[in-house]
Amino acid sequence: MKKNQLGQSDLHVSELTLGCMSLGTNSSKAKEIINRSLDAGINHLDTADLYDFGRNEEIVGEAIRDKRDQIILTTKVGNHFNKDKEDWFWDPSREHIKQGLKDSLHRLGTDYIDFYMLHGGTINDPINETIDAFEDLKKEGLIRAYGISSIRPNVIREYVSRSTIDAVMMQYNLLDRRPEEEILDLLHENNISVLARGPLAKGMFSSQAEQQLEKKGKDGFLDYAYDELKTIQQKLTELSGGHSLNAIALRYILKHPAVASAVFGASSVEQVEENVNASYTTLTDETYQAIQEITKPIQYASHR
Image 1 (cartoon, rainbow, N blue to C red):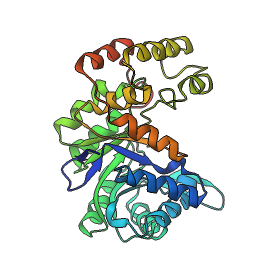
Image 2 (cartoon, rainbow, N blue to C red):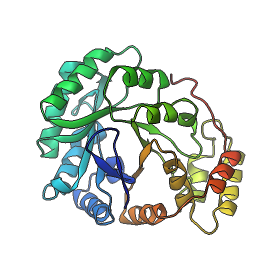
Image 3 (cartoon, helix red, strand yellow):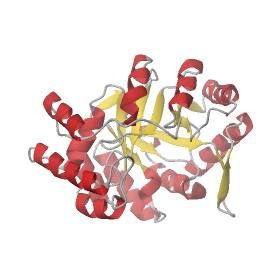
Image 4 (tube, one colour):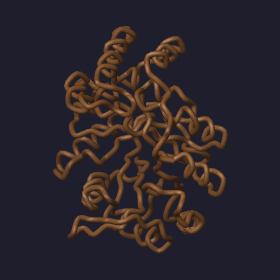
């Protein structure tokens, strides 16, 4: 599988990333999914301290213990949580970021994180303090590179201008084209990569497209009404030339040069195989433009 450089770091991540949030709490099943992903050429695993209140990191750590050097490992920080009470609050302070890393290293059973992300962020955060914390961790060799997980254009701009982030994780898919309007080109111009999460739009472009449309799209999705979603599915199928909707969806977001990897979730080995097989498709410029005519470039409104 093709690998892309993450920003200006020395990290090279596979075009597909396994998002570990959907692995569940069955460690043997999770290990099977991770191993299948690695066998298929995926080298990038994405987790976060908040997922299952730390349990997800523990499960990922157990699964990769004997193959840590084969993996680019990402986790996130910023949600100060209480595992026993199962609640949390936003905390982008230097103290929490540094303590959060220590806790993640312990749960993951490793002595460094390849890519460390702030798990959110607002324009009212102490941004310089947050950046300094990540820079300190980088100098100490505890993380190799860092970035943020955010869909807020104003927040992203602050990190672009003030920090040395190498990537931003954000939702980006055929139905959520908001990043195209004001983020993707900005990041590309600054040599900052994008990790695109939610590439299959809640499964509405997966092999279970029709079922997921009825389940996740019955009340609409972003600016799209249910009938519009159904029409888009039909038109994309006609455009696909025999390829799966997975393939169209994944190749569309990977077409932009800023996007280093598409981050998909999987709760079964079959889902891994489905997405890996789909990723080897190509997308012509003509099909790319046709997709843009079928969908619409909506803008960020409430999340700024």
